[in-house]
Length: 99
Image (cartoon, rainbow, N blue to C red; front, side):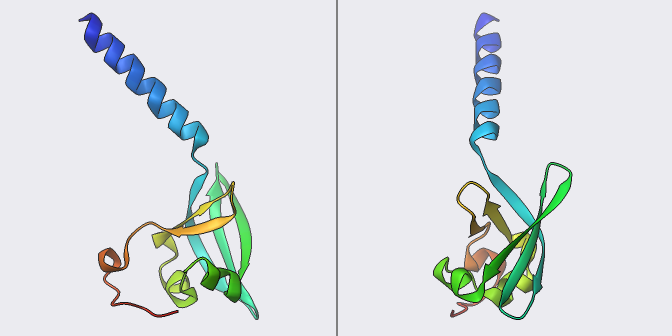
């Protein structure tokens, strides 16, 4: 019984520490403008907007059209201001999109 309590407490502690160090937020919307893409994500309950140029997206190996068509397949690392795919290309069902 003591082991179960200790395990549950340790698991809870680990999960909470990961939550506090994880700065990833899922993208909920992406919109194209003249020179780049505006992405919107939730920070808590507030929508937050970040702008990325096409060149910046290419440097991050993010295909701008895929981001526009599938914004929920991406997350933003708010600490590093970097977009990351949540799925691999094969998991999304896209056949080797070139940037």
